[in-house]
Length: 462
Image (cartoon, one colour):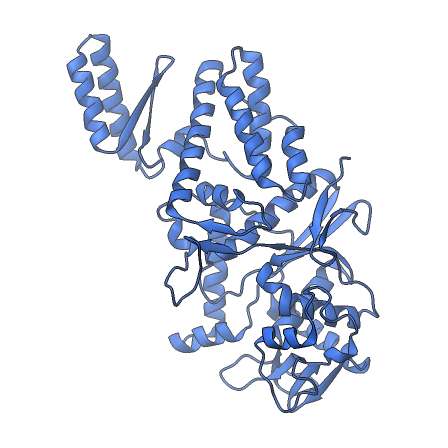
């Protein structure tokens, strides 16, 4: 098996990937807090780690990918209070929306999708282990992790104590031994959700939730933990501390992977700037594959700048790719995907998910298909292209469906009828009528493409 190399945030270098067990890989990524629709920044890790999951499944017999849903959180409480509805109604609505939107951009469901509220008993158990081992303490209805009890606190983020305190944005409460100590359990008051515990009626801290769900579904030590760069501190730093200390010093995750931020026209997304791009809204005007292509266009560790011009570029690229596939199918008949993606394509992804190089190879193979001169050559090249596409999650529609997207069945039938009238006029050498029909369709935003005796159509906007 050809080796896979991944950049490890913990070691700050690219490393050869070697799972703990030869035939098994466990991955955990932080999923959504379901209080609103996902924005494009939330979609980036969903797409990146979906691709990593697909790649690893080609190389290992068993890959378990866990991506959690945080369904107990103060943001959910606030959203429910504003609308005067139960908290479960908010979390159910936005979890369903998240699934729908991620499916539209080709992010497959993880192997397991644990929810925080289903793991309260395990959370209480982990807290008790930490208290018993002297790593946590109870104070005024809270249970807090004592960061001074863990010598390696700060190793992931590389921050010193002063930087961590400044960057944590946590409440400096008088009952804390150290201002940086973080909450494992906190008291709840109506209408906040709560559960019985040895420390009173309350709810878990956010950091604890992920540690417990990872432990429950993947064991004490997991192979890969992923998420956005914004989670390195304090979330992932705190996960490491509580997990290592509750597991007798065993490592929590062997490889840490973090994707870069998404900016919009070179500016950070924020509510104050009004530039937060919601996937649910973007999908109303753009195909999901177009969003996916743009999300994969930059290396995952680098920032990704989102703009209408780049989105249009991704759309044109996919139009061209589908056009190549359609023309080749018209010339040489239907194609089937090869058993494996091309080696050059795989090599790019094995090199720390280098999607810019992989997409360049993807487009190179498409150009080769466009220039194919024989049926055998076309079938071989198309097979490779389709195998590559299946791995990266592109070209998953048919050319006909892609180019007719946005048209009703009645409208599509009408367009096809006009094309047939135009073909008849051309056959009768009535070029004035044929041109008039083309002009009518062009005015409606429909472009005609004549190739190999076949007329195809697509919308100007793809």
